[in-house]
Image 1 (cartoon, rainbow, N blue to C red):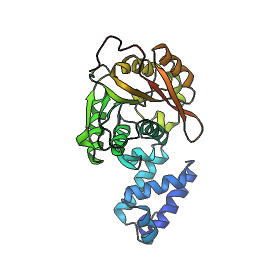
Image 2: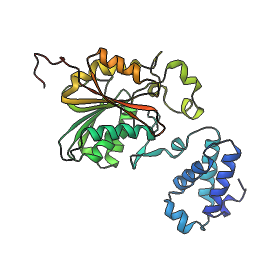
Image 3: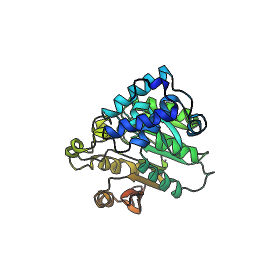
Length: 298
């Protein structure tokens, strides 16, 4: 990066950032450079287009240089900026939360398609809520719905609560500390989750951006990657109301295994959705048959 970064225009700074990231072996150098420049300078794309000739200045140059150093060391852009976009909404991150990923938007799409009535007074439950991105996205699309986000991490819950408020759904969202369904009562129309599903011995082989910066507890699914699904399937049935649906994000090679676990627990498969790369990504299940025989739903 030129020593006189502060004397560069915004467009020149973008080119300089891109060149340094490319030289440092960053695969998505151009995209990362644009995110860093816009995020650090607090700009929109239109600002770069209309006022790209404006000089960066000393303070912004120092901030860009610090961000560049962190990215070259393997820190993801989202962690550097402290937030990321999901479903067109901004989400702040925390040390105990995953970075929201585009693949998880498939889960939101499946859940919304299953409950298409925007005026319905639905109840959502998001297990392992993290940033709260799934629950917040659902509530943003269903203005009469309410929801509960559950997580074991108090730190993650504070982030999720702030994100719900910032995105205008805080009055319809409640956040609860607990271990999967153990802390909950009542019934829900949709139970959704993007749980940890990476096998323990695979975590060390993940990209450095993931293994070095994402919280291990949000990644580690146990020896076979299925521990969280066992816990969810064991408890979610009792939390589903009549006609309720369980919607789960899965790893690309886990559809058969998770379906087998669900069938053994009495659930009926309702659909499999794939992501844009064609990988299996989301499974849907009815609540277990016979679970409520002889009992009145709460």
